[in-house]
Amino acid sequence: MTNNQVEIQDKRIKIAKKRYRVLAFLIDFFIFWLIGMIIGILYGTPNNEGGFTFNGFPAITMIALGYFLWPISEGIWGQTIGKRFLNLKVLNDNFESIGFGQAFGRFFLGFADYMFFIGLIIASNNKLNKRIGDLVANTLVVKIK
Image (cartoon, rainbow, N blue to C red; front, side, top):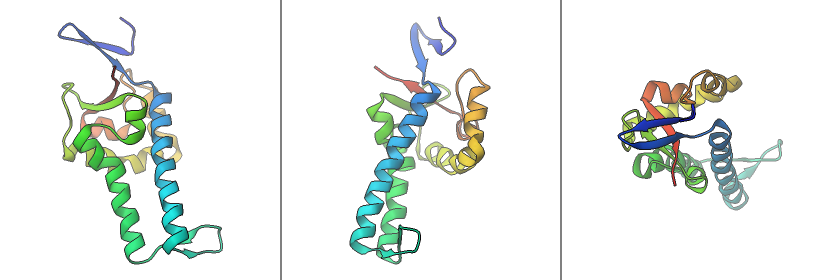
């Protein structure tokens, strides 16, 4: 058994590699960015930095989209679109589906993880590739199929 596999009741669970987790995040972020650009072109106010400023309904739409793309989709399916594309899934430490509390915990601590790549550094120093959000929410990301 390799160091990125855990044996549970005669089943091998393969821990997701960091590069696939980063790629899944980039896919999700690209989707968020693309939808944001479309909403910006249609409803936003151009700003001096080449982007758009959102007020009112477009701003609420972007906030709702962010919640749906990350914690809500993980709370319902255990996956974001990027994770689904790469056959990754978020489970709790007992290898069961996570709930909304754990999904939101991972999401909000993700902001700390992305500052200065702290989450990547922490994930590199534990055998289950857990970032801060995973450690606090008692979750892990696995490869399925």
